[in-house]
Length: 488
Image 1 (cartoon, helix red, strand yellow):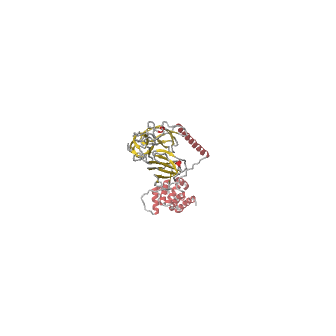
Image 2 (cartoon, rainbow, N blue to C red; image 1 turned 180 degrees about the vertical axis):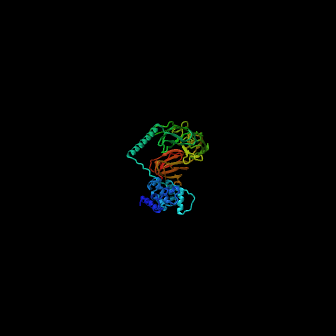
Image 3 (cartoon, rainbow, N blue to C red; image 1 turned 90 degrees about the vertical axis):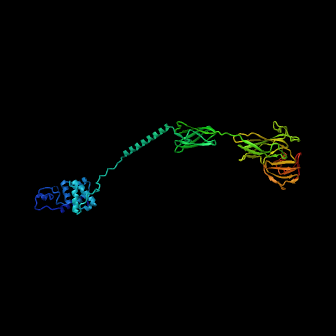
């Protein structure tokens, strides 16, 4: 059933349920049952006395000369609800709250007193009078807004506008970028000058620039480079030397080639430490000592030193003994003619400051010798030279056997007896190993490789006496040259 049908039913219901005109009335009463016999509007003259509320609403609308559809447009209340009010069917309005709201709005529209209309509604429903309440009136019908319509021309124009704005912004950014040099800041160190302790050997410079900037640091030894990361941060270690270290930091944009407006100057100072000369002492040999064996061990202590160099100079024959024969060219300059001195020995100073020749003693021949010791440190400072004077007067025979250039099997007889350290079967020794034998009358050596076995007799170096890989036996006696034997 449509709204128009509801409106017609409402009007018909009012006429059926309302009071009927008196048949004996005049023609005007017949024509208008809602006026009294004098043609007055009962609602205006008597306050609608004798009419029900639906009849009053219908009569007021008829008097206003509008239909339900016009009232719907004016009040924004649906026609079906207005018809329900004029029929007295309040249950169709969704509850008393809505019914009272519609009654108030409709009464105001029809020119009736809304409070009196609501009061009559309560009386006819048998409801007691209640205090005035604030009603939540349903929102009136609102005509929907017209939607936005975009024509193709508007869309194209909008896209072109956005494109032009984007291109203009990009061009602006590029112009600013090419016109502006890259920024540069050094965050470590915070100050342009910095002093470190004397042990510092490097420092890491750090700072900020534009992302991807090329960072160049000029140093005394050249330049080093780095690249700023995605947020513009960079860091680069640099080497330091003692004294003043000056660095110039620059940044350049890899796209535009522009450099920072002002390079940053950094000065880092490392104090110059006072280098002390080494202090040296020689504990042995004691000055003026006479040895019966030419293998002289030298030892002592040193401070602020890294190594000790030891050498020997022949000073002359021992008291009462003739000088050993040697070429004059073998003697050191300024010294008496005599045997060739042994090569210098360099030993390392231990952490506790001690040093000694250990397994490489000075091999000295018969005579008087001056032993010279000098200490030095890593900075090139050398100590004062210390000297010790010793005399070598051999008794018997002292033979030093050294394996050089390969391995060699060795068997030794001392004073005609098998040396217990080597054994009856002999032993194989490796390149660089050294053996010392001391006898009263003789030392005899059988070697499996004569060319890889060298000999030093009473401090006099004899070198190798045969060829490599050839087994030979050599006999050594005091005051006599070595002789080859057949002992095996």
